[in-house]
Amino acid sequence: MRKIVFAIAILCTTLAGAQAFIGNMDNKFQVGANIQDGATGIFVSYDYGLGENMSIGVVSGYALSVHDGIDANFGDRIDLKARFNAHLGNIINIDENFDIYPGLNLGLKNFGGHIGARYFFSQGFGIFTEAAFPIAKFNANDLKPAEYIHNQFVFNIGAAFNL
Image 1: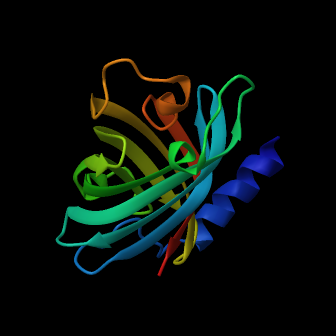
Image 2: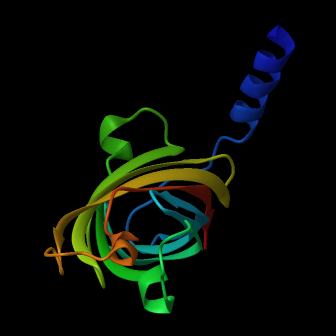
């Protein structure tokens, strides 16, 4: 066990120089799994840095697997959103490779919020996790089972890349 902890510590120190969010004109791409009640799928996002602590971007999710009993067409399975992030990594100052970013998003299904975190192991590669939730649903009355896809609490996890 000591050897594993030592190897991880050495790996982390040799990978110094990565930075989770550099600010203005930063480009991040993320791809991963989308996990929610009744469906699982893929998640992709792109963020562009506007300033030291903020970015705008787009995010999309597509439900590949939908539970039995839910009749979902293409429009039910896909979601596309514009988003705004406030990057707090340099404010919290845990590690320059770590960033936490709360934000708001406006999509085809709802207006919502999200909170995410990413950690970069090298200059170009890291991991992320993100949780999103609706604040206001566009069709709040009498949602059909397929309309709950992307209109509920959603968890995303995957890989992050610097472009």
